[in-house]
Image (cartoon, rainbow, N blue to C red):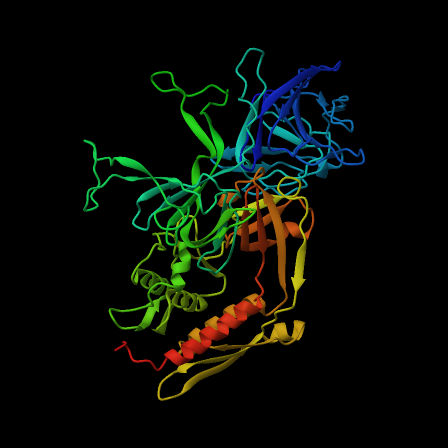
Length: 627
């Protein structure tokens, strides 16, 4: 790092800058104004270089209603000492209410008596992570991930040969993320590429095909953008799509040209010939709207740009063409796939067609029951839970499956029996016997079932003032479950498993909450206790919940899934120490709404559980196979 020349910021997600303006004052400071999508609307970034002090200053300014200035991002000076130096000036910065440049303030590089105000750090990067090492007299904690906060001072310690010193000014947080290098260059040198376009703008492509994979076409008359909601520990979800068409109109359809046996005519490369036909209606048989058709929804956002070095110069191939890299998903990212389960046409003064699409995970409730050959009673003895889940999915496999890393090893083996149970009931039963902290869901984007433990560290960290304007956290004792009566199945010799489990400490602290479980598939006390402990780990004490909104302009919302762990930064209070799990995700065109914490059982879920318990009770005495 050359004194006064290079400054490295570690900003979550990475960014690029656009140089907007350069001005000089009468104190030898050269100011360069930078715009960046990292900052909120109205924020500005200034770099200052003092030729005498060899100092670089960077800060972000946010205009606040009422005309009160506020610095809420990074402000830092960096100086490198290559040898012994005496006292020399160091530049500061201030703004007026509209963000325009006012003046600089000069301080002296001294060693104040109050050494706790000094901030001496060495910062660097290693791939996507940053690190820092503190110097003497630092009043902050520096961790390996480079996250720390510090005091606002304009004094640096006395010079030491070979040591780098930094001073944070009005800083809120210095956080882990991608290295962003800003280089102050002599006139005429290359500068970084321009401001990144807004990646919050999304387009959606609806691809339609038959169940056998035959491509039909795309819906070009979708009125609304995609939106859907999914909860944790569920197989999938549904979404509704409105089409701006009349059911009475005809439409053109493209299909492969075939002979009388249905064999496609192809060219010399094997590609089929297509013909265009006119349908009798715009919905129904032989159209692109019919029950059972497969719909894949792709979101397109972002752009392509040249791959450049730290000087902004593009890397090129042997012909001089630049290598291109993508930001976001300019060619599309599949975010929902399923099949049409119903459609409704409106006739009259207004026309339109509403189509309901169910993700493929919903087939776990409607596909073939768990079987072994023709036998509908299937037993597993001392079998790993993850092996049972995979075996259930492998029974007459459908479109929902698993990959090598979507189902983790639980480290728990169980003995269980399924009698005329659906795949969903089997997966839920296996999940109930995992240890506390596990979750599962069917992903509507990739048609995989995920069965995993919750992360120890946050999968996503959201910052006040960047991703969030505020957070409301609710503490509820509405659904206490700290004493559980458990009725299981026959443990042998006609003896029914009947146990009671409780959390005495939670009862003493928060009062009694009784809960009953009846599931004849449980015949081992250890499995019943594991299930009861899992319930009490979530509901024995009051739970914390929160609902937050994340804008697509600030974050790649497609990367957030149910089950992920969310952390918070820059609140300056106990919120920064909270980690909460995503239990519900509502996807909208320009944002995602996340429910964090635990989901309270709704009345319809309670009724569904009771019906499942009654069914399991009845099915226990069934013959092994139907006649």
